[in-house]
Amino acid sequence: MEQQTHFGFRAVSREEKRQRVMGVFSSVASRYDVMNDLMSGGLHRLWKRRMVAAAAVGAGGRVLDVAAGSGDIAIGLARKVGASGRVVLTDLNEPMLAEGARRVVDVGLLPGRADCVQSDGTALAFADRSFDQVTIAFGIRNFVDIEAGLAEFYRVLKPGGQLLVMEFSRPVLPLLATIYDSYSFNVIPLLGEKVAGDRASYQYLVESIRRFPNQRRFAKLIEGAGFGMVRYTNLTGGVVAMHRGYRL
Ligand code: SAM
Image 1 (cartoon, rainbow, N blue to C red):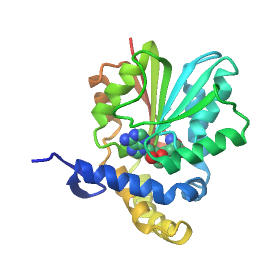
Image 2: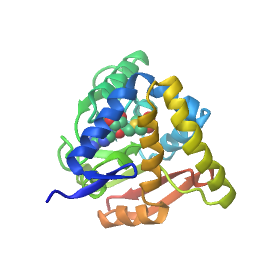
Image 3: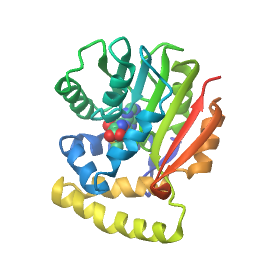
């Protein structure tokens, strides 16, 4: 029998989750950036700035941004590694990657400095030990197999390379958790309906956040994939967490 997983709160087969996740991102791609600003009140820009600042890569570095979507992290890191560096944006979803490719051109990054390659984060189309830095922001929650993704990130990192993962997590203060819950379940699906014309995708977003492992459990999964010196930082009281680990 095929292994079961979850799509939001619903138990589904792995293949069904994969197809549904692709459906979500194909549906939201053209409104993705505006919805991020609206839902987070612009906070996602600050979170992402923190992530780019935390990346342990400098001029000339080679970076892989997995589940790159419209490219916020990749563009920030392309500036950080400079003209002698290279950033690869990879995403499984073609319409999302097309948004990333369009933005890369808009900000003047030429091929060679930032390149887009369609690939599954759980079966990356890149050689072993080929990147100094792997990043993934708000992507791994959508994977059918999180452990397979982490194993792939480890495989493509050079020894000494850093993995940075940003994901929605668990608010640490009870009052914040209550307000956040109410906002998530009442406001976000409504915004999805009114602005993106797609309530179901934003209902999936909030449900998938609740199902994702908390800060500690996720840190254990990263360690389980072989990473060392695993740490996390809570942002906005744990609404978001940034995990880091190294291939030692
Ligand atoms: N990283 C971008 C950001 O922070 O704005 C985009 C995040 S968006 C919420 C999640 C992205 O994960 C989507 O672009 C989606 O296509 C991608 N994704 C989902 N499953 C994936 C998989 N198995 N492999 C690669 N990308 C995947």
